[in-house]
Amino acid sequence: MSVVDEFHGARDYRDDTEAFFSDLEKGEKISVVLAPSFFGLYGDRAEGIIGCLKSLGVEKIYDGGYGREISAYLTAKFIKESAALPAKERKFISNSCPALITVIQKYHPFLLEKLIPVQPASVSTAIYAHKYLGDTNKIAYLSACIASKDEVDSENTGGNLNYNITFSRVMKRLEQYNFEDYKEKGSLDLTANGFGSLLARGGEFADLITYFFPRTENIIPLKGFSEQNMNSLYLFFDDEYSEVHPIISEVTACPSGCISGPGFNSKEFDVKTVYSNINKIKSRVFELKNLI
Image (cartoon, rainbow, N blue to C red; front, side, top):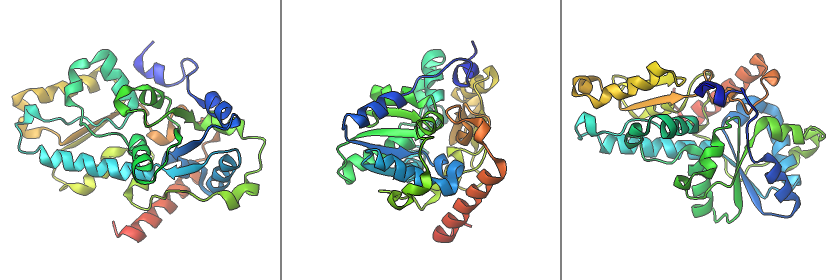
């Protein structure tokens, strides 16, 4: 089985959706971090889904775009502070895709030393909730990403996330509910209004880093874990490539970006609706932050 197959449905995947709902029913105090893609995929339905989850016992629900912005800022800060190092000593690989971390750990351990040491967006949101909002609950991460299960289980994320739950399985559990009935309970406990909310079909975390640097800087986004893509990362250990060394390189599992991860039922993907939702998010962010 190829690495790509491993993350894209060649076999059933594992997540924590059943444990999440079981623990809610037992009265466990749980909060949820929503991946930014949630708002692109579900648009006008989002408020009702949030309200429905709260009616089932979820105490707090946070927009993961907030942590995505924190992660982007800290990543840019790290890159700038490391700029004076010799090229071959710089860390330059983004850890924003948990599938990449799993691939590196299994097949390319030599690249571990090149990972930028900043927590990913989901974990950054959970840390913020724990540290600054006083949230002592267990926290679940809801997204289309099945590889986030490894992130939840990793000792490197400090136990800040406790469940990885996926859109397709959560929506299956909620299919009996009319979301319109729950809209009045659908307020977020942490809202992201900055560029961490921005989505683009195919665009990723590296897009956000471009806001911090001149357009002349070398930022390399790669799709998929092909031998060619992974081997290209080793080039920058060589002094010969120091002049073209990227400030960041991002390799992601999903060809169309996080918005189309295997934890979302692709049969529910309506191009017109999703792109309309994405454009509304862009308009809101650009209007508030004057990013145009």
